[in-house]
Image (cartoon, rainbow, N blue to C red; front, side, top):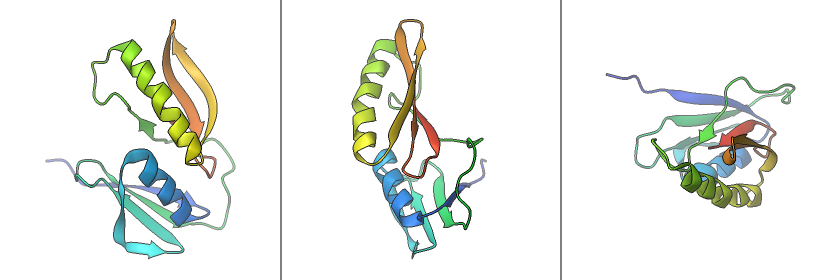
Length: 127
């Protein structure tokens, strides 16, 4: 049996960054974690891990060593061209929600993934 776990993240504004990830992942805010200094979001279907955000005094200073990959095509195997189309659909919605595009990574002549930053500068990928 697997163990339930939570991805814990430092944040400058936990509520704002939780709102972004709710939009990006289709998660919902977890009740009881709605104070200014902490927030938690959960998969409404109960499949994915919870993600918690806690306010910390220091800002982000380097590349994060762990990051979220948004898998727009779901679990593999994938049709590469269809996955590239889904990536191109998702990226503008994330930009509208406050993310920024860093770069595109290509696998030969097909878009492989897009590296982005969330509103607090944390890197993540859309793949």
